[in-house]
Image (spheres, rainbow, N blue to C red):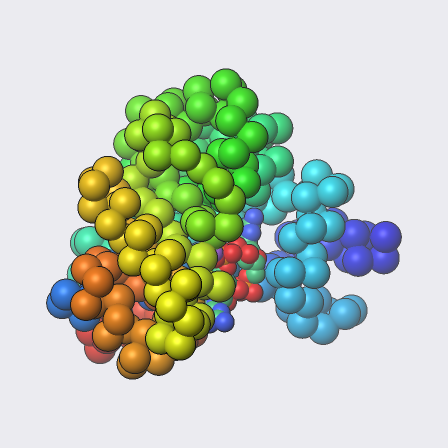
Length: 254
Ligand code: G
Ligand code: G
Ligand code: MN
Ligand code: NA
């Protein structure tokens, strides 16, 4: 409850900020996007990791105002990258299941795009495979209305749930993000290698872009390139960094 009370004030106090992790086109080495990851530097509690406060934000409903702030801030930053000479860098935002079901996410997204002037194709919404697996009709309907706005949809933590192929087609998603738990051991573990290979192939057949998460070593990246994965993010390339640092990294072209 103490954490919840502090979190309630964190937005007003300006204690939340976004970090960005570059997404790399494996064929060219170019930065093609960035995932926004929230950080909380609390005056009272010090640094609180998102793994601790996001669940509380979800239980308390605070994820709704926080989620809107994240999306607005990410769109403003992406707009700044584009005006700074990087017209093709998109931003990906994590969306909680609660935002998806409880907030009018379609209206929120439309308003924020209008307000910030970001082109919809430069905004990607990451939803988890577990949300999709609940396969409620209204989730499907919301996804189709978001697609109609022109934003991109990706499935986060892909491989940890059991979404069927027919589903993936029906849902009109653009990208699959291979969960980092599979990428971690691709070099040593033949089962994980087989899973990652299968997801990449599935992406090709269904014409979905595939992003590998959590790439930490040259050997993992080589494996991904060999198997035809298009895009990756991970400590091997760059950890999540502040907006200022990300802008500098963009300028260096790595
Ligand atoms: O960033 P890591 O940096 O520790 O993030 C931990 C977890 O928090 C991840 O599962 C990530 O998806 C989630 N997360 C990070 N930022 C956000 C956010 O803005 N909104 C939501 N809903 N989850 C986030
Ligand atoms: O759940 P989601 O995929 O949104 O969360 C991404 C999480 O992975 C964040 O906590 C982010 O900081 C973390 N992350 C990013 N790159 C790497 C990496 O190379 N290795 C590991 N272990 N974690 C990473
Ligand atoms: Mn994510
Ligand atoms: Na993930």
